[in-house]
Image 1: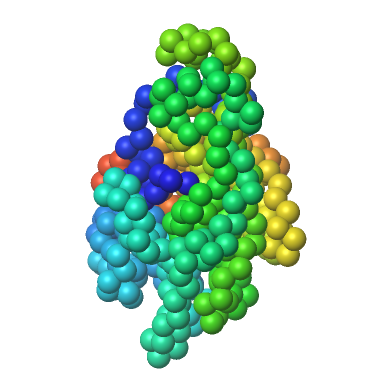
Image 2: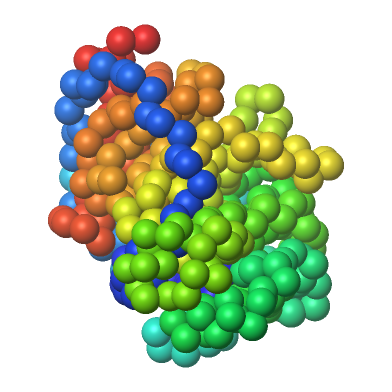
Length: 365
């Protein structure tokens, strides 16, 4: 995805195309009782808590505003674990190691100049994996078609007139955004490559899966609103699928949140999704869709909790159905903790914070 600095960038995306495209029908939210758990604020010392990691009772945060990986102390302050991590957005811990993602550059300042994963092992030994170099060499989605298939001259002129690429395949772009431990290796959700990457302890990178393109269809109403010709009505536009978080399930499968490319706010409808990916075959299956800005997920007690950034809430998925769980303005990250608890990070749409949510209180299981 060319729009990087993920949440900051999508929040800044204009509405020039907001009425032009409509997504495939979103899955309706399942009727659920509105829960009553009250989040407990653990810290307000954060700026942009893009990802959390809970290891026992230790809460780690990848803060892209402070450019650090920090540990939340009992008094709410942050103790730097990695004191300088420019462009950090993801963090995971396992086997006495910590891995974190960073991306430098990107819109609106210019092209991405560096992106990758750093693994900090015993004694502070560091191993780096350069996902931008891997993307440049391999480009996993090079064979995926985006835009419009076989556009007519009229359709091409219409899209070019509003600044949308008309017919293209995956370009060179890496934004290592989130990371999860997978055995002694790591799985990186690369929001630029539109792929899941596997990184070994030695820093070797391989492709696990490429997420599928996300179609949207132009309606007559949308075309008329922008004065576009009739030739665009009914045309399907395939947006890029942008993985934002990855978690390993108890079944050994990978669970991934995605943004569907293009404007991510409500102007195109709730188009975010959750996929299940087989890490051995790369086979991808849709779990649920109809999410408004799916930026992060947590797996807890057989449920999938998702932060819907543009809806300002945490939702829960059960049996493929999405239900509202908790209103949480600015919700951007979420992680499962001990005893069925959840930890969430908020920011970019209000005072940043890290909160703890007790799912056992006020929630009908």
